[in-house]
Length: 217
Image (cartoon, rainbow, N blue to C red):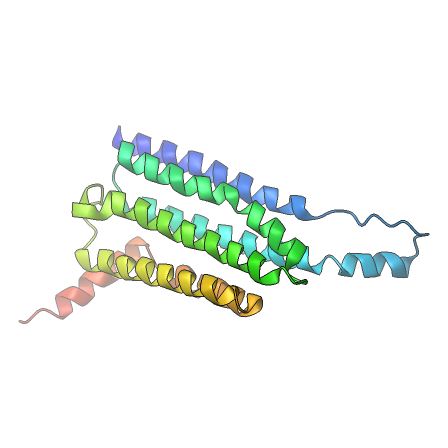
């Protein structure tokens, strides 16, 4: 029953991630050209959509990385109780919100509203980080829902990554209020952390071997 509940929650979550990623493309609008259209005029109008393209790619990749890490969390849990499900639902709530700050960023990244738009975008990642921590803690605290095969050292590695990520997202939000592009760069640089945060069974076995090698003989 526990495995079945975990699969159901993960499948529902996959659907929400897919919908959020799909909605991002709605920010693109076919240029509404009033004058007579020529190839050159249309090309210039299409090039003018670069803020939308930039925001779309950044947010799509962010959702992709979050989806991969979401699966990583589920690889480590053996069951999904009500507390875990509500924490997961809170995370999905913020995931579905991502298209809005993406649209604001696309609309204002190239004007005087850029710092506010960037701060909203980075702030949304702060909220996402808090939700991921809540989801992780709902399973990790006292190893409530964590599989017995997962060593403590592996859990501590994930704890550190999540806590560090939250700090960096907060810093990115503050910096974005001053310099939009720098704040966004700091925020998106965390892709490196999340891409290389390994939840895989092989990573778990490596952690066990490292811990065993460090024990006094």
